[in-house]
Length: 179
Image (cartoon, rainbow, N blue to C red):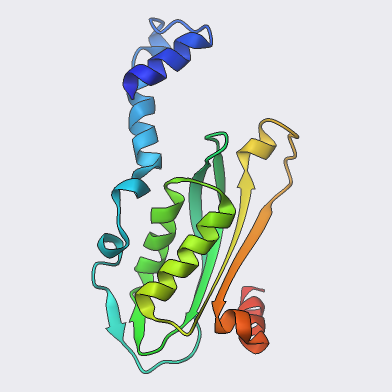
């Protein structure tokens, strides 16, 4: 990967021998590996058996989980927050695991729409929840730094599974907790 970054830098006309760029290919390769570390993780690794018995059948919500991802179309960041809620059916997920699931999928080349669905489907498959809702709000550098260059635009996506899709009261409760 280091050589590829060196070729990219040289191809834009930069001098790889100037002091500020001497170690840049190595640093860029390490940074890119970190930014895409979600590919080295599995759902089982991330959850790590942190699933606990519970009699709760009320909505559990984790708000404002910051996320950083790379747009698969331009390799530019999108940055935002995820809101995740589910209704347990006998099992609850360790709180930090919700954020770790968000990170695992965000740290891959992504589109926000797919990221939202991957998180929702994973929470549902791990917990067996009767419903899952995920909303992501993010700003996309591919719209801000290039192309249309719109600095104040943001994108919101949602995935509603189970009772979040079929029961308007459940969906409304989720949305009202976000306000």
